[in-house]
Every structure is written in structure tokens, then in C-alpha cells.
Amino acid sequence: MGEPGDPPEGTPESAPGGGGEDEYRSVVFDESFIRAARLQEFSAQERITDHAPAVRRRPGLHRGLTRQAVLLVILIVIAFGTAIYMGVRNPYQGATAARRPEPLRMTVIPLSPQGKVPGAASVSQLYKHSPAAEFRTAAGGINLPPEQHTAHFSESQVYAALTTVKDYLVESSLDPDVLTGKTVRPVRILLDPQQLDQFDRSFDRPAADGRHEATGWLVRFDPKQAELAGTGIRVQGTLRATETDADTLEVASDHTFVYALRPAGSDAKASLFTVRRELHFRFDRDDLRMHQAEVLVSYVQAGPLSCSADSAAHLHPLLAGQAPKEGGPAGTDPYDTGGTTSLCGALAPSAQPSL
Image (cartoon, rainbow, N blue to C red; front, side, top):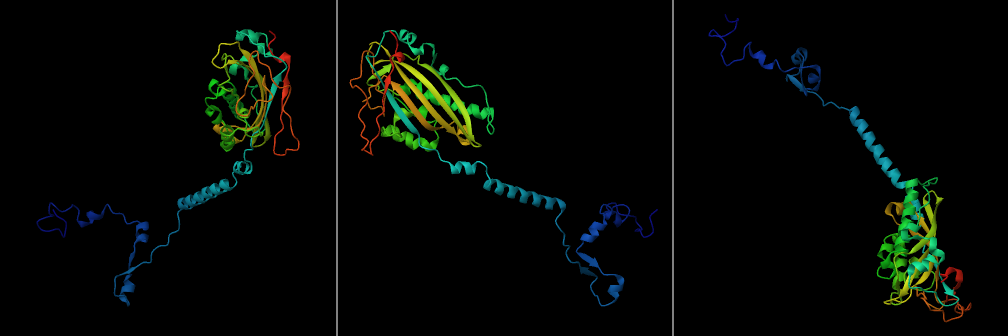
């Protein structure tokens, strides 16, 4: 039987059971929903008075920022401030900007023999009867010191500096293509970029001015005069790393290289040629990262050479059986302020093979 008020013929099948109220049972009018409503019904008392409309519009709610939004804004401000602070207070930026690489200061001293240069058909016999008999061969003679660190540089950073110096010595003193003047690129790529102009000027327009001698950067022989008699170059020397300040490492190298040479394009007897290179390198943190070095000082003694030979572009060795024509170094005029001082030394007989 139907409920009172139901149609006599009963509730239509299409209508929801339980009356129209069932349509809104899934809608919950909770307190937050009511507070958020933009329209508000006047009370019965208010409607009796002067208010004709049944409802009034409520003013919009002025909601503040949520706690999460406030925290997000604070974090953004902190991150932005930190980025600005680090940009201004970068500990490496000031040091890099304050110190630019210095020009390489170089000295190349020829060593003149006191008689004819000894020679032999056998390169091994030359080495065996020379002071280089116990030297190691090629890169095996450039040894790194034991692992070490400094106050501001780790072992890996000191090792990186020493390895770069060793690579520089190998490329500039042992690479056959560099020694014969075919290329300079293996040496050039190891230099601090701000020294490249001086390096290029030394090869484009070499001069014995203490700044632009190609032989101050590397060892190379005049290819028209001499060639290598063997690749077993003998080497002995030391490396030493020190910290000069919190952002700078320096490495000092002192090595003697002994080459077997013969006249270019000839099967004549070979002779030995000795080059002692004392180099000082400097590294900042960018140099360590880029595997590059700044060369500060290059002090070279090489012989047998003639004192009168121009050694700025190439070394012109005296070979087996040759002797210097001049009796000593060229004269120096102390009144010529635009000139350079000639430097030459005597090659001791004990430095030559005793054949």
C-alpha cells in the first residue's frame, strides 16, 4: 500500500524510490559548504521588515596564504639570496681575476766543446761510455714523487699538477715530431690559454730576447742539419710540488735529456747531445681542472753548440768530428741598451763520451 500523499496509481517506475528527497541524499551540506556560499537567505524576521528579496549576497572571503604557500615563498627567497651571495663571494673568482699568467722568462745557454765532438757508429756504445749510462729511457726517466698533499690541495690535485708537468716534458722533450720541428701542437695544448700569444710569437718570429725563443718552450733541432740516430733518449731528473698560497700550486722540474744525433740524411757516426732543462710551472684551480699549465721560468743549457750559433728558433748541434770555430762567446756591448747579453758556457770533457 502506498504512503499518504502518493498518487493513487502508485509511484511511477521511472521515479526514484522514497520520494524526491532521495535525489539529494549524496549531497552533504556541511558547515564549510555553508560558509563558502555567496548567497545567504534572510531570516523570517528580516523578511517581515523592509527586505523584499529573500536572499542577500555575502561579501567574498579574504583568505590568507596557506602555510605551504608561505613556506614555498620563503624557500624561493632564500635560494635566490644564496645564489646572489655565492655569485658575489665566489672564493675562486677574485683570485682568478686578480692574477693573470705572467710571460715566460727564458734563458738558453749554449755549451761549447773544448775540442772535437766524439762519435761512434754504435749508439749503445756512446751511451755506455757517457755519464748517461745509468739514465732511464724516455718517459721512464721522468718519475713522479711519492703521493703528497698540501694545506689547501688534495693528493689528487697535486697529482694532477705533477702529471701535467710530466706530459709537458714528454711532449716538449721526447716527441720525435716536436724534436724535428714537424709540429708544436702537442706542447701548445698543454699551456694556459693566456700564454698562447707569447708561444705563437716565439715560433712565428723567434728572437733571443728572453721572451720569444722557441727553444725556451721545447727542444727542437734544425732538421736540415741533424736527425735522431735512435729513439732511446736517456733522461734523469726530479719533480717537486709546493703550495704558494691557498689557490696556487707550483711545480719545479729539473731534468737532463741526452740525444743521439747524426747528420741529416747520412749514415755518418752518431754523437751525443745533452740538454738540461729547469722549468717552473704554476697552476690555479682552473689549470688543474683543464690539464693545463702556466710556464713561469725556462732555464736551458745545451751542447755541444757553437757560441755564435743562433739558438732562438732551433738548436744547431755540433756533430761527431766537429769543433767550434770561435774561441769563446761573442762580444757584448754594455753601451747598447737595446741589445741582449750573449751567454755561453764551456762543455766539460767529462760530459762527453770517453771513447
